[in-house]
Length: 129
Image 1 (cartoon, rainbow, N blue to C red):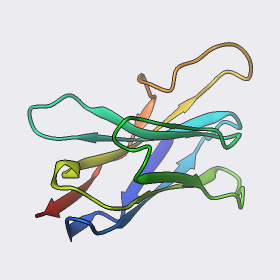
Image 2: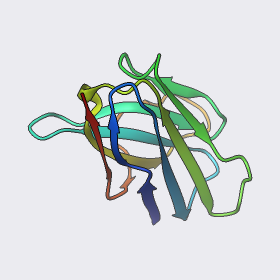
Image 3: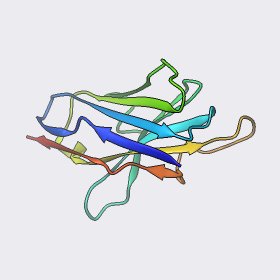
């Protein structure tokens, strides 16, 4: 089991910034990916960014120029913290942001996309115009 706790959400004006934090704890595999997804009512959940334990990253069309995903490198056993720095926020970024974790294979192909095995409870981000 892996527990994920998000924080850092809130309300900000358009053009502002927020930094989300996700603390993962429990049975964290040495090779893993931790992602940020977002969801608005009536819409499908969508990937914002994901980071592999080797440091490689995946961004999507709306995140690649404004968001930065990073990972705490202190390497505390059974714990990891992932951040999502969001700059130049737009009202369209308003959503609940979820942190997600999955173990990935050491070799072979895998996908940055779902499914992920464990999810946090989410943190609300509101961007006002």
